[in-house]
Every structure is written in C-alpha cells, then in structure tokens.
Length: 198
Image 1 (cartoon, rainbow, N blue to C red):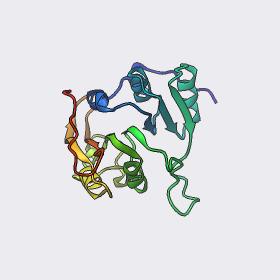
Image 2: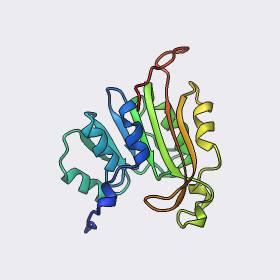
Image 3: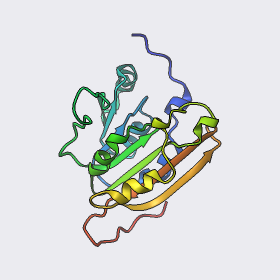
Image 4: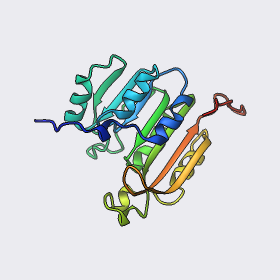
C-alpha cells in the first residue's frame, strides 16, 4: 500500500490539546485513534512515553518511520463488532493522560474514562450535533449530543473533575461544530488537585 504524503496540517496539534497537555503528569499517554500522530509527537516532546493506537496501518507506519523512541505504535481496530462487547486491550493498564480527537465510538467512552490513572488527565475533542451544516461527519452516530462529554465524566464510577469544557462552532482550521473537555481523575477520594497555571 502506498501511503499518501503528509501535509503540515496532518502534524499540527490541536490548540485544545496543546493548551492542556502540560497538565499531564509523569507516566504513559494513550493517543487513541492517533492518525498521523500529531498528538503522540507532542506528548513525546514533553517527555512522555506514548502508546499511539489506530486501525490504519499506513498512517502508523508513517509515524513509526519518523523514529521517535518515546512513541510506540499499535495497530488495533477498537470497533471490531465480532466480539460481544467493545474491544479494549488496555485492562488493567492505567494512563497518566488520554487524548482523543476527531473520533467517537460511544461504546468505548466508559472504558476510556476507566483507563485513567489517579491524577490522570482526559483531553477529548470531537465533532458535535450541528456539524452537518459544515460537512462531514454528518452521521449522528459520530456526533456528540449537547453536553455528552460532561455527562460522561460525571457518570464515571469515580467522577472526574472538569478543568474546562467548550461546545460550539470552531472557525479554524476549518469551520466545525465541536465539543471538547479536559478533565482530571482525583488522585484520592475527597482530595482537590492543585493544577499548574496554563
């Protein structure tokens, strides 16, 4: 398979992820549906070991060719419906940070939250209802309903503390309706995290 050439936009980290990446403490980061690895490379540059997961072997090969020793690529199709439940190979592993952008598979959402270590940071940004006005994705299966990420972190067995949440139209890099959240799993029950200024 011939891989397509990379464009600068393929490697430009999301402004949302760049803003909150410094909150992630020491430990491994999971970049879920990593694509060309723009966020894997960002976290590697910040000193993290990164598990970069995608179902597209061609983009993972391109990422591996860039040869960053802190980035391990893993080819997994997390939406394989042959199994009775969602495929989630990261149990009992816990991550210091989990980043997800432009990807939604609802059956995985509780598993993603459950895979955060104490003190772990979830940085999630994807398309929301209303994006059909701007183009794809337009299928409601791939668009968050209003407040869905807030409901997700509040419903967790150990609820996460929301650092920031936004929902609305993004003009750059292209017009889109998005929903995004940064949330932290408390280190211990009843404690308050002291977060650095960002």
